[in-house]
Length: 521
Ligand SMILES: [Zn+2]
Image 1: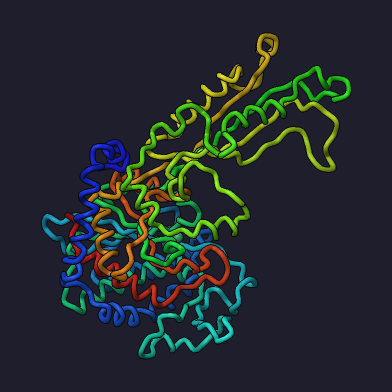
Image 2: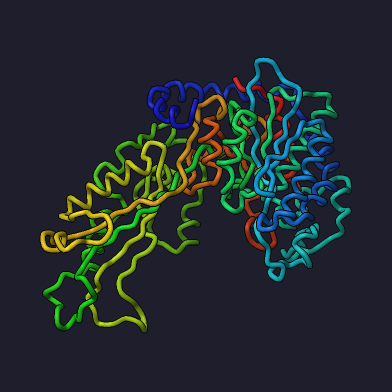
């Protein structure tokens, strides 16, 4: 049941998807009566794990320093083993990943691999409004709206103030979810409950570097990691702060287009009006690729994308404040590829990420340049993969009268063809997507629905616009996946003053504890 196979079957399963959508809503009422973790049980275990959490975020974890990664892996190895997990450090050039498995198997139950990462972004300590990003502090919002450091023991007071925040590197990204996961196991144990799933865990050690080692490590341990589904706890919730589920992400592929002009730059006075200018030709060529409304005009570009009415409804439910987004980015009007931002992200895109011809500014001179180059990034989807889109671009460029070559034009090329260009495709991340109505998707949605506010539907992101480094994990294990972010949207991940809201920490423990207690049908 690979994401790509599922994508192909999506058309056939549209009706059953609609049916499931209706049944899921009904099922969630019964869901909440299961013997699950209560909020109080989650709160108790969450609070009890906070000393461990503070200890873990005090360990520097930039993957540029292997010795630091080793310390984090060792620390987590002990924390998982202490709770009864079987653990193994997966070799990775001195920066081992941690594998943990719950030893008690549930006959007939599905196996879920939980993926999180133990490494973090680099820090610039001077940017932080605390003495040291590796020394966690607890903060509370003052009456004037600023964040002030308060005594750490406020985390252990009763009742626990959900609006307190812990500030430290990786407090949210991604050590918060790892300790939430451990706290969920503690809560189950305290309640005398066992997981209803077979549970595996992979903690990546280089996610913030783009997971360069994930393909090799996953391939070397494919059998160990094999699972029926993958749950990724990473990233923030949707800006609306509703519980969030992400079912896929677009891929990205680089394409370079070079339009050739004269053999060498020429004096624009001597040759202007006589020698064609490649910069102008490139501009014309690019302009032929998109219309004024932002829709790609390359023939067939969107043909494979079909969105059902039920899917469009879910996309519209996301609740993005698009007026605020347009104001924030500084545009009056959005392109019209989709009716909403979320809908637009379901289509492949054709973006110019850079252009160059001769020089600009002080270095500009009066020449007809010898070539003009445009760099593109194509955002791909499972239905419209890189080779497919690249083929369409090639056909489009040829249709505009261009002779396509590899490398530099030869004398023969120059003497026989008026318009000469080169189109090359680079590498990039792949698009992956799990159907919204897949068993894994329904299971995760049902849990979020049942543990969330009764008046709110969780946000379902069918496909994120950007790529994530976990695409190769999903691809190699050939398993459906969902991303289930647990931390606050305003956590400042990747920058200074990264923080985690304690209320989200408690909710995360309850969410994971409930996922563990609910079987996948
Ligand atoms: Zn992360």
